[in-house]
Length: 211
Image 1 (cartoon, rainbow, N blue to C red):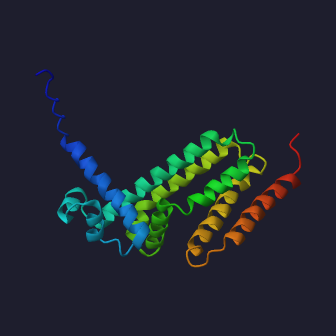
Image 2: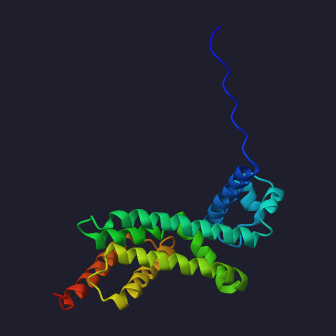
């Protein structure tokens, strides 16, 4: 008989095993918070979704808060990856403003954003959570704004207003996503998107030419 036995897979290092456990816990936390809300995403619920024991979770994190903070960092990182992917191709689009608006709107209904929104709401009344995530939040938005500036999608607007315009649209779409589950009006949403784009375009057209 010919052939040879398959070589055994190399055993994972302790660091690799820890990274895999943390990844499972973070993914489970995102799903639990997105599905059930911040308060109901208990340690038991998270560990059950991750297929891990509560003891396994506490071997990686000292507290639920530590896991939440680590999860928020991962959510921001994944959101940034999505923004970067869009920004790399935005300049090549014929109607970059329309593409950017539609992406921003769709992003507000992603499972990542639902989880992040729950964490934001919890941070409003949880001073320790708020303090611990504030630096990451500031860094996240600073990088997003810098990326938007680099794409040139808002180049027709005054520089001192571009950041405010981004947050104005972001908060509009975020509020829309919150209301949608209990008051779904696709027709109204389509009109709102068209109105926002028309308002921005009309404003840009009203500005004096830089030539």
